[in-house]
Length: 114
Length: 248
Image 1 (cartoon, rainbow over the protein chains, first blue to last red):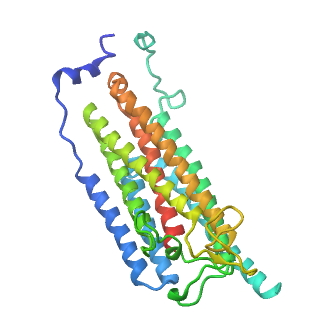
Image 2 (cartoon, chains in turn brown, blue):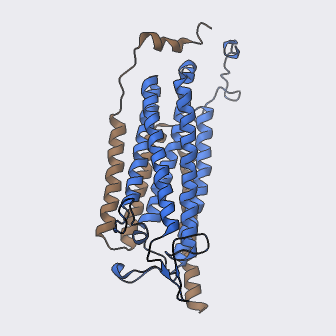
Image 3 (cartoon, helix red, strand yellow):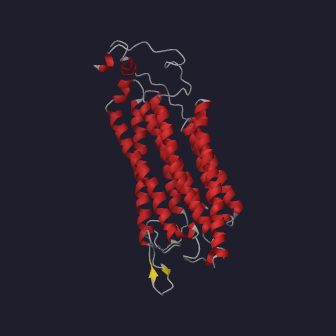
């Protein structure tokens, strides 16, 4: 038992290190700023491809900060990072492919079956 | 007593367990792979959303002249413009902005709980977990209101071809646009809401364990980290739902 309950030392010494939260609040600031910027664009720009592109790029930035900092993936091994990123890249590919497919459905239905 | 049994000496060879290529514990790795599979599910939902959206006519007229019709896909700002207590006031995306902020904030309190766990600071872990549970519960409440409003609809409704008006939404018809619009709203935000709900349950469980000193006795707060991964994932999904469903 002697070495299995070393954790109890924390109770007696009461020696808890100071919190290191600077990076966390910085990430929070970035996420809030990006979201606020998205709203700004939603109300000042006309809808269109450019606006949608800006939204998607900002979303990817937000996703990067959440996954890299909050989920700590940036500080994991390269192998784990790739294990997560490569399947997601394939899903993104599927998304792009099916968006094109949707446009094709629309085109067929409106132009050829009316 | 099982914890006090003598452990065998750990293996050190490359092929008998001594090699740890991903440098992460079993539990954390499995959480990552579970989240990856969950991301596929949400990815599928968003892919179907994108496909249906491209399949339907976009609204091309002036935004001010927009009316709900099954002919075209609705502009989200015109659908989600209600705020509790401000009946009849046009406040586009205001409520969803609030929900987004609450969820991001809950993500931050979750990281703070994980950080406190690294320092073995039981009081701080408890404090930040409670904040996270609170924000998660508020988010769920907001979503319940959002759903109730979406289902009930407003006074205008949508004029149908036969002269009748429909109000609100269900799975077969809705006042906002094509039936698929409401279906996807229910499935995507509903599936996300279910995840938030499970997350709150998991958080309550680790909160009780933390209060009872389970993790302190164990010597590490890795369970808080694992639930934290799940919670951030829920936040991450919301970031995408927010962009694709409410902004674009």
